[in-house]
Length: 198
Image 1 (spheres, rainbow, N blue to C red):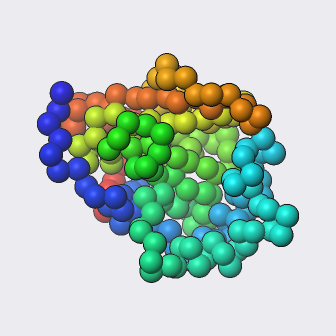
Image 2: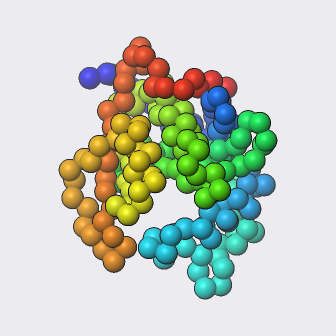
């Protein structure tokens, strides 16, 4: 087991910019709110109500902008995913430290616009985030995914996540699977695509 006595505090990833061959993963800015609002509007009808726009259309673009700009909120560890060539923002990818995994171990989260899916962007972005997690001293990462979300399950399988075997109670939204991945040591071969942290 790797000794891990100085993992970065929550918000450390959110202060980082990562570059891959095709993408820039950078801190969120207010201008990203339009894209994030579109993500809310595109979500599958099977997700829980708190993950969908409500009858009044909230959160609005203004709500999301205020959340990003809010000085009182902690810096998000979810980075905006931007195309290096065009500058287009496709969604977000990052880590959650109060998610469904073991205490102190990060859970990866990603969501891209439908128009950006099936191009390998989610796998590329998540690979960069996991490489950062390795450099930060984390030994495992977690991910929760709806059983019906075939696209995200394919991404997690490509990355090396496996079913943790921890039963998650089924609900009217379906079965939520908790997956886990052992991260390679820092001196192990690269996790795939080149990543250039700044």
